[in-house]
Length: 206
Image 1: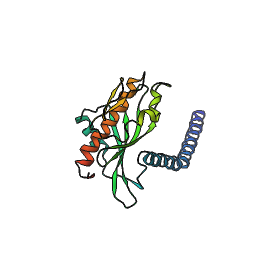
Image 2 (image 1 turned 90 degrees about the horizontal axis):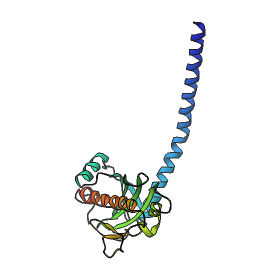
Image 3 (image 1 turned 30 degrees about the horizontal axis):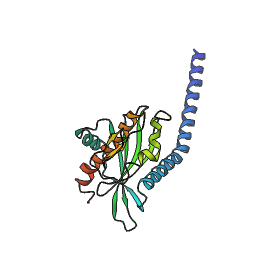
Image 4 (image 1 turned 60 degrees about the horizontal axis):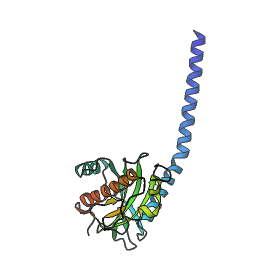
């Protein structure tokens, strides 16, 4: 009986010590990780909105409402995860940066920042995370692909394998139709949310 109690106390001590150690490690690493994520987000905002001077998180953003809006618009595989407002040096609103995730990627989720000017023109795209096939879907990270959206004002983009010839068309990645579709639908979802929530909601005035 004494042996059982002794072993139980030893096990409890080990468990308690491990828990305290893990808690200490978490406390030490939490702040640097948060700072790194913040910098990553700021860098992405600057990449898609180089003309902006400051970026402020849109405090009224509601992820559940965003999901509802996208579902109503037919985007069930795409998510808007946060919204940042972009302003110039005078504090005038230029547009917004949306963090979008598409779940339709061939290798998993594809997340990217999408910059949109007040008039609905795409100002830029920055890939945040992607795990597509090397040499095929991973080419979505190349500017020759994602750069096709920048500077274009379209209600909805489509992709083609025969050469883009219209403002709302982009060239598909050869051999990576699934990745192309995921990115295109993700951009379209972001644009849809921008119009339905930010423009119609009065946050953005063209």
